[in-house]
Amino acid sequence: MDTLFTLAYEIGSLYIIVLIGWIVKRKKLISEDGQRAFTTLLLYVALPCLIISSMHMPFQYEQAYGALIMFVLSIYIMSGTLFLSRFIARRLTISMDRKAVFENVILFGNQGFIGMVIILQLFGQEGVLFASVFNLIYYVLIWTYAIYIMNPEGLPDSKAMFILKNPGFLATMVGFILFIFPIQIPSFIMEPIAIIGQMTVPLSMIMIGMMISAITFSRAVAYMKDALVYIAVLIRLFIYPILFFLPLLFFQIPFEWFMVACLLSATPSPATISMYAQVYGGDMEFSSVVVFFSTLLSVISIPIVYFFFLFFI
Image 1 (cartoon, rainbow, N blue to C red):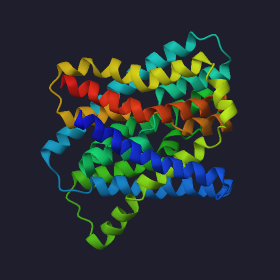
Image 2 (image 1 turned 30 degrees about the vertical axis):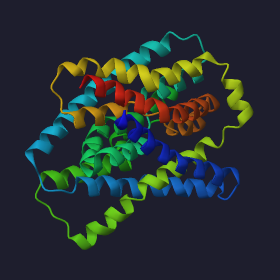
Image 3 (image 1 turned 120 degrees about the vertical axis):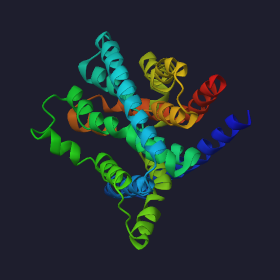
């Protein structure tokens, strides 16, 4: 019970920062252009620095083996959830723009921002190393497949270069090279990178607060009558993590590796999908509401998922 309380406390503390971001945006202390600059700073500077600094450590066979296990788990989880999400979405009798958004919000979690922050808080720098490897396939899919199902014509001809421009994917590859090969970057370079990486925690949570501030109270109440919202949130926060990780209990996977993958898979729907919906013609309001509710409920759901598997391991 102490572990559950500690986890809820850590996540609750993070969401205090979300509240600050919500207030900042609602009080119009930052403009739309300022918010976009804020997001760019986080996505292209702070998060890549966190990934690189976390993976810049002496090579150890146990960590290399753990990274391999995380990559295998990533293939298993992303392929399984992709197939099931496609299966569920095709059987819904709703408009195509909402169907594409629904598939995206149940398939993808906020693994890059909220997920990395939670893993850093619970498991430290080594946890971020494993999380970065686990997120590799996620980065590829959210920058390709997520756009494709909303707008098949939305991807550029050079899909490989499009993926390589993903800062999270690129930073993970750079960090992995630093981890595998005996390359030691001087401390006067790595220390500033590590300091910038530490900005990821507050910046990401403030950004989430600013994004969900776009949902008015009246619209949130109206969508509370929409069963599809509940279904999407339930699948994203509870059904997928439990369904796909229960079979893994039969394998002797170390606790930290198991929980890093599990908690990343239990993160709420990402605001990125709302951005895609706006650009590529999906139901942006529906996606924003699902992101809003799943983000709020994840304060409770992530500790529940953690405690559920802690009971069995």
